[in-house]
Image 1 (cartoon, rainbow, N blue to C red):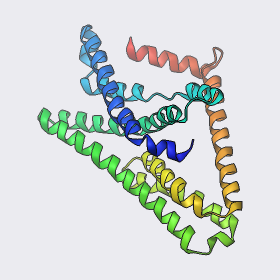
Image 2 (cartoon, rainbow, N blue to C red; image 1 turned 180 degrees about the vertical axis):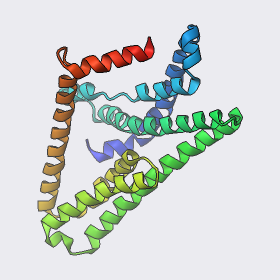
Image 3 (cartoon, rainbow, N blue to C red; image 1 turned 90 degrees about the vertical axis):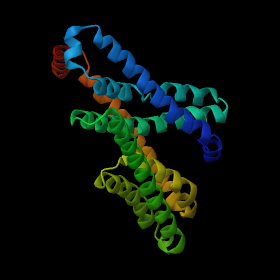
Image 4 (cartoon, rainbow, N blue to C red; image 1 turned 90 degrees about the horizontal axis):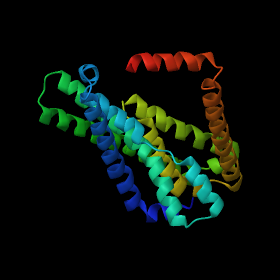
Length: 250
């Protein structure tokens, strides 16, 4: 995806990711909570925060198939950018939203008023998300400065290694301060794609693209192979998981 299409539609992407995911979370959570009230048994074991947590988990859609079809059909770049950008950001929003709901549940369990619990949840959402954005942008810009004002480009292997390690360090730094690493890596990648990548040597650009393409390919195949082997009808683990899931709800 071209960066100019992503940033040109950044307002619509953020609205769909933030507002759309939040609305979906509360709608699904509210419907689930209403259904649980219809059963006396479920009403005694299912709380509102658990229903909202389920809504946050289920709201993070990943339209991989749609994007693959869009790529084959060569649809309008702006449409592709909207779907791709929203699908990337809604995962991050759902993670932070689930953490905020857990904060709300803990505050409510401690006997605090609903208003204070909501304010704590909103503060947790803002703090975690903004902190992750700050860490990602900071390390992304730091990588850009290192590659621009040093002679590391004269050593392509070292340059590529630095690029990869700084990207992974973003995830570790965010997790170390109790933030979310996925959001930090996302915004670090945006900064690196906009600034750092242009400072790399031609050999490092080719190596970096090939390396991340390989990781992407391996990760996708591992995920689908693992899901297929774990959920096959003859897999013992699938039977165990399904029985546990059934027993927990029935």
